Image 1 (cartoon, one colour):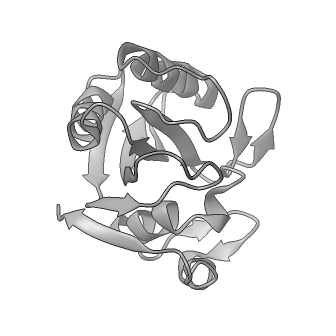
Image 2: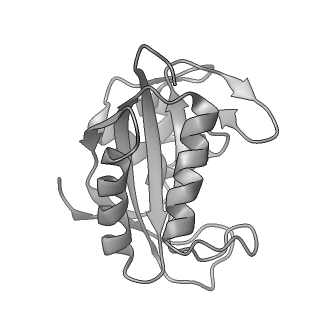
Image 3: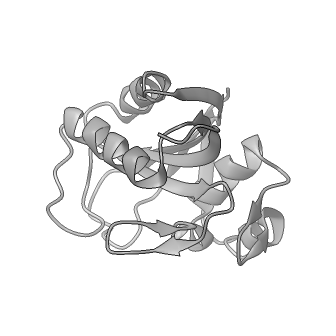
Length: 165
């Protein structure tokens, strides 16, 4: 664990087995991570699937946490939460009970076999950028700039806010 808490944004998504409940439970589980505090959580948003269209719509949200976990330790903790929710990784863009991704970890930029920060596909996804902007309107994405113009490039993607915070 790091001694000084770091700020991390986590994307949450689900489209199987009561997705709203899956996301709400995941928010609670983020609070239970060692050395971690849930600072903010976005509203819940409904979005159409990306890539593989023959599946239910997704429920998405973003959380801001302060954590003493190092980036790879945080990733492993998130993968364990996914597994506890019955996550099966059968193929890219497949339906899932729960998906947890580290979007940003402080201003860290990294790329290795397990983790890329900032998250490599977040810039093309309104279902990530909209809830992120809701809880961090002044967010700056390392190497890419302020969030508002990035969200504007996703204007063709439909999102429906379904549960306000």
